[in-house]
Image 1 (spheres, rainbow, N blue to C red):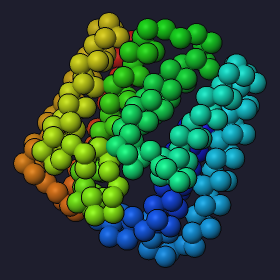
Image 2 (image 1 turned 135 degrees about the vertical axis):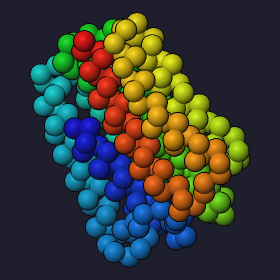
Image 3 (image 1 turned 45 degrees about the vertical axis):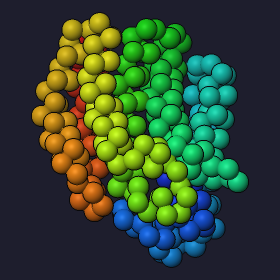
Image 4 (image 1 turned 30 degrees about the vertical axis):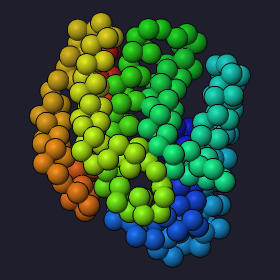
Length: 240
């Protein structure tokens, strides 16, 4: 379900940004709609199919756990679509990181725990904060890369609002907070996440040195790898 929603939000963002023309001067990886590799309506249908599949799986999960899960799914789909879709997308107002923290951090982590245990604990909530921070870091470095282009098309992401220097500081803050809040689980083995610190330091140095444009693409990939490594070590530590 989570994977389907991730696919769906990427397709919907590709479609919405493409038809608005905000991806016309994109620095990052090629997008289907803006590049003309696929018709806009085809990309939109792909998003709808991914949302539909996630909904079917969500209903099944709800039948095994709680029907409240359906309500969470509805909010998740709405958040995914209206991030860049609709007449007044909130992603263009600097609220993308807030949404990512809530849906890819808190809801994804606590929700996954809840459907398996039918309870919500402090540990589950505390564990969601580092995951939300790292999910936000992916969007943050992406928006730093696209800041100049977004400014030209009035896409006021948080990076545009904060400016270049403060955006980089915010990115570092997100990485640091992931390690700090991992300790709030009060699970000693959660400190095993510290073995990923060298990766975080390497990324941080390049970001603070002023890497920009296409030079940030490899750092975006490394940030994704950091999130995966952190999640694996964090889960292992909590299990112990």
